[in-house]
Amino acid sequence: MKTGQITSAGEASRRRLLDAATTEFAAYGIAGARIDRISAAAHVNKAQIYKYYRSKDELFDAVFTEHLDVIVDTVPATGDDLPGYAVRLYDAYLVRPELVRLAAWARLERTPTGDLYHFMPGHDGEKIQSIADAQAKGLVDPGIPPADVLAIVTTMSMTWSPASPMYAAYKDEPEAAHEARRAALALTVRRAFTP
Image 1 (spheres, rainbow, N blue to C red):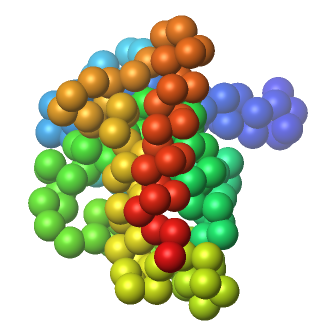
Image 2: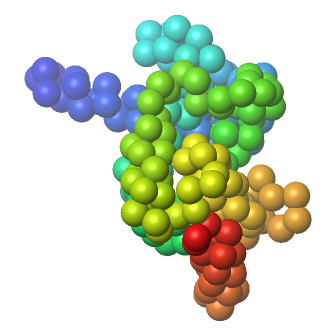
């Protein structure tokens, strides 16, 4: 077998592993996840899993970081369009509900207080700066610290997410339901932060 094929097979195994681990951690959390189930679902033996990741916690970190990176890359925050940012997050949660579940498990099992993303220094620096810039331009109420604006908008975007205590939206619902929620979310964010 050629080296390129070995790398391809290794990358395919790692992809299957991360996908299986995502499903397992989203469903059972960190403590409840089982490496045996991940191994079977990924068709990757346990020794190979531990070759890639030294522990179940390290595997969870890799899964969680990957999903956060996808959201950061596909849903850029722009302080001059907080309503649009909230709506884009709502849509992202419809497509990737596992991110919300992973974040909920991380909050419950790992970091009950403080910064949930402490293991990703600077994860929100750009977003906070964008909000601060919008505040300086008079587009966003300057009476609330930018980090708090980001926290509130993000939480508002999760109103119908899998972490909602009231109702969890799902992508196969009628589009009219999603449109009504998007409109309500955008309006609420606009009213909350426009000076």
